[in-house]
Length: 337
Image 1 (cartoon, rainbow, N blue to C red):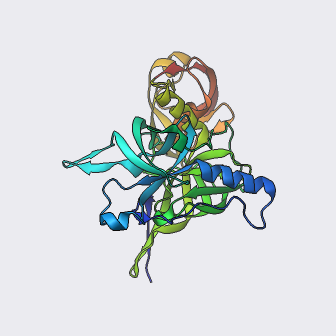
Image 2: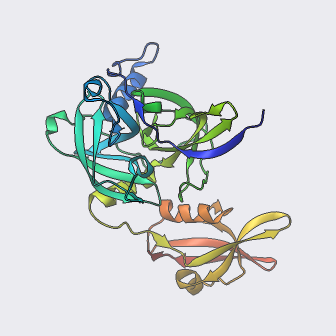
Image 3: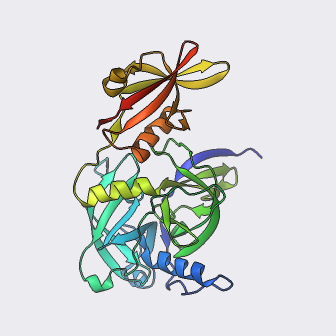
């Protein structure tokens, strides 16, 4: 049987279970139980804007399309693609949505801001604060480790909140659905997990679930996968802080337009044009980019993500290049976007 794979953003409409997650998990240690309880309390279900159910049925069923995670003061983050909708022939991000907490409070929320690069959206709950989640989440400023145990809480196929466990895989995955680096996770995830948090066994937030690799067969569409991808938490936190504070985050610029070249049978990144900081620092057109600081440069997306995540404007970085047959190291003072 032939099968084709594709990247799928996790959006679906489903029906949520009436009930909340238990406070403990049988067989789990106390620390993990507390971590799951906290992450579950901070998880939010994104309700479908116009549920096609009769009014009587709507009293017993909630239509959920995606997940989100509460940060603080009613602010929560979710995936941008999870809230977008078609309106008048155009794709729009709604100014107001309705969400469901794990305590089954249905609450309105207003848009704070979105970022297309990371595919995230930030909203803030409005109305009675006593109904807001008391659990909060902050993304940790560290890299996960390959093989590290993680879990996510969300609404796969609209059901939940459910908990899924897995392990971190490739830390440097690049997909067509996001311009940033993504964390690949060996974990069961389905349509509807999108926007949910990726947590460590201690309850630390490492990222926001973004996509799965979906497989289609002649037997029909499969909307779940063992391979999920998440936006890195340190990048999410930086963008979220900027959106909440109403400012545009500043990112470092290098001033290099890149192209791909093949050398010795291997594809590498080369300079198509050098301007600004790169040109002032001595980098020229045709230089092959080998490394920035201690990280090897293998793709343009990898370099771009490194600049976003690990540097700040005006910082000096070492760029190693190959010019002809000779390696050179240039000290570059980064600019600002």
